[in-house]
Image 1 (cartoon, rainbow, N blue to C red):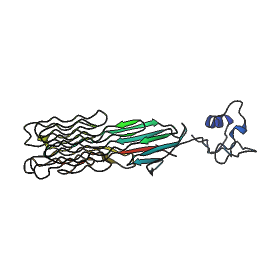
Image 2: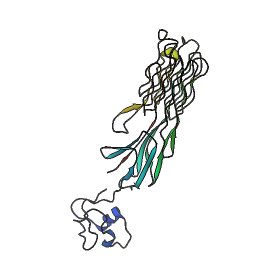
Image 3: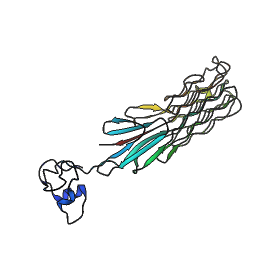
Length: 315
């Protein structure tokens, strides 16, 4: 807290703000703040009015934007978050993060939708003056063919925290959905859904033999994928304002079908899930890819790549 802007200022108040050791002398405080002389006479009140020992987190790396009193670092590729000043209690000492892994691919024709990459966020995380490696998980590549299960997305990491890649969507008749940050949707022949990780995402939608050859939606960061006999939609993503505006990311991919005349296909979940048969997850959202349909769209969609966003008070 800055010292008052008028009236009396005591040496003990200056010591509380700037530190020092007893017995206190004015020379301890030469040049401690803008406007305070580095030598010679110090006028206790006038020179210290409004001064503060506040220090704020200072860092570099990624694409940096400003939101009021906050700096926002966005990483869409691997890099380093380098802290040059860890701040102090009078200013700021912590950061907030959002770490999203790569989304999974959808399953081949009438398979399950791909699960979203793991979604982890926290505030009040202390940092030190050092470099922190940032890894951005790739979205899973698209698969082709009738019986191909979707591949899992890759992990993202930052500040010693790792988010797990999304679980691939189930294949048409051979495999259920895979486990991941969010789980892949079950296939059209009763293959079970993949499970998500608590605190990162949700399970894929369940599939069953009475699904009319429809696969289920992949899990999202905000909700489970929708079952094959209930609409096949990918699970909804989660919303964050860490970047300065409200954005929804990490939606699950939609499930596929035997053909578009029998049940159609599921839409992607909010937040960039594959929104059409074989649709790709949106880049840098960690969303899952949509499953294919048979026979019109045999291949499935790829997963969306992940992202890391770090925010802190800088003034």
